[in-house]
Length: 413
Image (cartoon, rainbow, N blue to C red):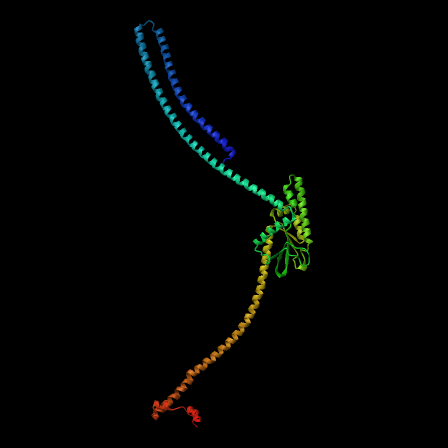
């Protein structure tokens, strides 16, 4: 989870201060342990001396009658024993101190390692903060530039929409974008600024429907009071401009119905379109006065936003395609009838030709069978007669046909 920028700097400062105090605490604690150990040894030595002196004083009081030599010897032995006992205690305390010191050093080492990890984490946080802060600064700069451009565009658009002519041109551009998106072509699917035949009015767009029908659309829409509604600073001003805008829309619907956009003499359909070049404006009308749309429909006027206009254009295009398909289908059926007639004539001629070919085949069969056999018999008889008369084939070749002699006889005469 990323902390907000305004909370990250105090957090980092507090974290650094906490780390510094922790290091200082353990440093002072280590020094304090050494000082306490030294103080304890001093106190133990002083206490031992005091106890020894008190014991000596008591011994002096108890053994006043003893000789000074015996008392001195006992005192020396006692002091020796006391020193040995104190030395053992000091040694034990020193060992215990060294053990505690080692434990403290180990704890300090672990704390140092943890502090290093915390420092590394802090460094990573700092790098990440710098990167994110730089990215945030860049994004804020881009957003500021885009906001400035949007403000300029809005100002230009507001200035452009201040006049009726400018609003009409803007509406035409938006409508043409929707028409291009729907695949409509000027001169093929629609006409622009075409004067009606039986009236002087001129709709902005005229859509060409099947069977010569037409559908007119007007794109000039009143937006002055809507823009004032958006700029109003108080609720009363907003309410006033809202009512004025809805009144302007009703007035626009009334104007369109009186302009002969619905004209049976010009072969138009019974409805006319009013294009609203902004979805937000269309939604505003629907939310604030739902009866207005119903009133417009009763007057044969359809209010269209860019989305609803695209839907209407899709229906128109489908109707045109269905009509063209129906018309083409009729032409195809007519051509199929003509083709069927020609096909019947072709089959009749083909059957006749087949019959003639079959007759020719039969005659050919006769020639190659019966007629050929009869001719072969006659030739065989002639050959038999030649052999009987012993006529050589050369003599037969020298015989001229009678027809040849008859043909040459007149020439000789």
